[in-house]
Image (cartoon, rainbow, N blue to C red):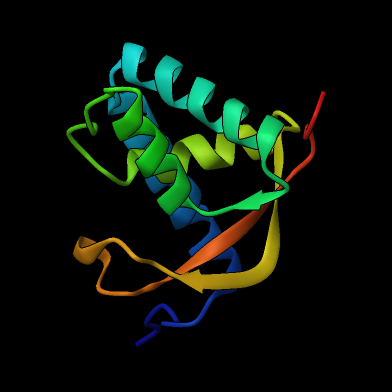
Length: 114
């Protein structure tokens, strides 16, 4: 019997991309517009930041969380594809209680001061 491997990097990337696409497709257009503006604002003013910073600025701007919080991951991916930010190889532990101090990727601005 030929069972699929549990370890297949290309299949893992394809599954990730499909999941990101589904989450993004189901996020409200208004929320996506708002979160994109928040990410651009952070990238303009900060050299580096994490999604904790995005969540904080969303709250400060009075923007409610989406029905699926993982939509922020799709927004970060979109910002990277648009040349606003780039992923670093570093992480910081989250300060958000709901994240239980989990490591969060540090993103570098490509537009600071522009």
